[in-house]
Length: 420
Ligand code: ATP
Ligand code: MG
Image 1 (cartoon, rainbow, N blue to C red):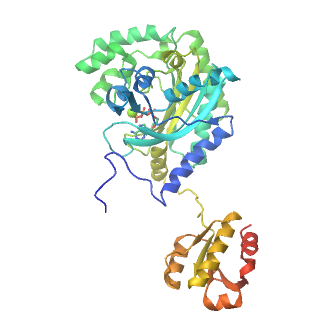
Image 2 (cartoon, rainbow, N blue to C red):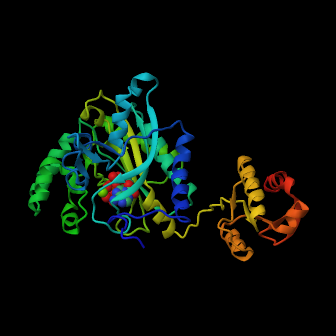
Image 3 (cartoon, protein in one colour):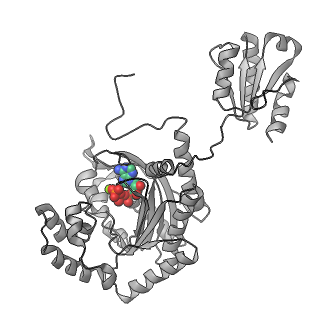
């Protein structure tokens, strides 16, 4: 072991388990690529103000969880705790919203950093795949995103997840509700900090996870009863579209989510096998965010799915992803000259698209065959001194154990035809 360990709240992705993470990212990305979303990548850090304004001054993310630092040049930056605000910043900066058709639809995949209390499913470095559809107000777009996330989870074989859905209203109806909720909260027995939060952003109090707070919220007024006609109609349309797509969801009138910028449609994917870190993904409409960060009005909707928790959800359901071994052929040279010959054959196989690996370090036959088995390769190529003299190589089928000699010059054609 080295003197160093991964920092608290982080962990390394190591083979072979790391293949699961790649597969999850891929499973989430595939339906997006198939639906007009283009790939976007933004820096791992941004001006801290982008998050303060975009995510919200009163959120846990901004008040407690951000990694903030000052550069030698005097810039105040933060490691990104989320990627929606950065994506919108990038789209506005590049004027993508002016370039062509709205909405601009993009997806991303990457690390997020939050200074949280580490526990199972809650880390300081974690990874998300997210999607954003920027610049259109259309219930079909909200529905599309919910349907695509559902499709990703289904493609992974997950079953024990639920979709919680709510509407947070808009700038017409939310202020009226906000005032009513504030009145209600002032009458409760809450600590200083929570009362202060009730003043700045009362909806966030609904998201408080503490039982002593939740207990007092049973009779809280619900946004559902305050929605304006436009919001009601919009929400009803989203519900109908996802229902028609066969997506099952639950109405959750208390769902608010942790970020300040959501309006109207909000949703969360929860998994029942994960204990208290049950949210595997979430998202919603954020019609006001663009203006909050200095852009024009650009109604938008998006989600972020947590890769780490999705992997935990797979484990909780006992799902083994079908991840085929990458290596098809494992080459075992016995002796100096065999090493040269076989190494160039392996290079040739690789150039021809056959996944091949090689026994390095001058191992003997026994150790090399062990490595061949461990690699999961379908075939082994063994080249000894006598084979070399005869211009052949032993081709071993690792499943049946069958072994035949083929000409050294036939290796590539033979394996290509066998592997299809
Ligand atoms: P939570 O309520 O669990 O803190 P959140 O509302 O902060 O979640 P979002 O900001 O909506 O989460 O992020 C979307 C997804 O990213 C979550 O559903 C979760 O799967 C994942 N996620 C968020 N924070 C963490 C973390 N600290 N470690 C691992 N995954 C996380
Ligand atoms: Mg959180």
